[in-house]
Length: 117
Image 1 (cartoon, rainbow, N blue to C red):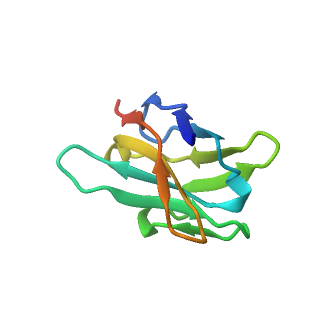
Image 2 (cartoon, one colour; image 1 turned 60 degrees about the vertical axis):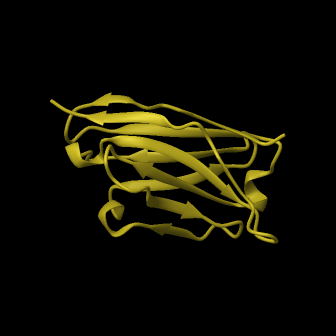
Image 3 (cartoon, rainbow, N blue to C red; image 1 turned 90 degrees about the vertical axis):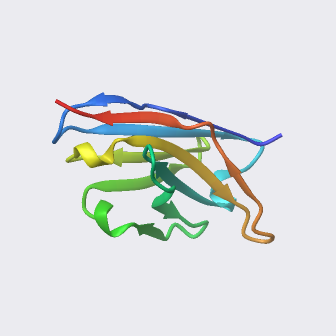
């Protein structure tokens, strides 16, 4: 059974930082394309960042230079380091895993990030 468990969300001030974690079980993070998505109230889900099995990263334009996605093979965990946070970054952030050979996807339950002074 595949489980993706996010943590690290919370309240941050504008300009602050948070680090989200996605602990995976039932899959090997390194063998999949892992990603972070977010959904704000009343808005569609949007891509934040992905990291492929080869380590190639991809970011949404508004996150480039502020967010960094990375993986830890030993911990089987994916991280999202978020710096220079803005109020518009407020959303529920979801961890996602996509199997490269058949495209099957798994998603975590999400973690709330609120950026406010």
